[in-house]
Image (cartoon, rainbow, N blue to C red):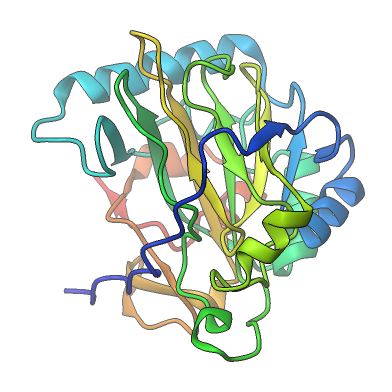
Length: 280
């Protein structure tokens, strides 16, 4: 069994109102612009990347998964994070895997041999609360060491419109190499930014960047799917071909895809998904 992923520090509490909409600050239209935004701000938003009919199909799949889940929320009060199987819809040529703009941006950020290691959804329900400001990985800068280079990028894609009331993600631009201890000084100069997204919008996010979930005040769950990508050498876990230990904190989630779905992929998609185990 693979060792559990080390946990980042617990985070920093910050006033709920100290946030403003991101506006166009984090927006990109091309792969080059997305790379620039991720390197400078830790996040890039691309509008209308995914077609609405595909998004509707993915949303319906996620709702079926949510209906079948048991047990309490696992990301704090009324908030859940759940793994997803890379189904035929999630592997669509119109989707994230192999999308020409996303692929070019990820290859520039992580190297041409980058690989997928995770597919999941993040869902705040009505009654959820502000999370502490946190990163999604253990960072050297929080231990007093020089920051490590970028090794992991998530691609979050909105399956519903994300507005002020249903739990938008709040990010601290430019915080990917700023320690939690130094974050208040940055927050004194730069407010948190709230990501308001439409169905089909995509956000590329450096997992080192500081962010938090906000409360969902609506009766419907706010579903956001996320693919995780990393430098191939950074990925650890039970992968296709056996267990391996990577050089960084990209711990593969326990997912697999059907052999017949893998057979339907094009060459580039197979390359990106080459570490995901296959099942019958």
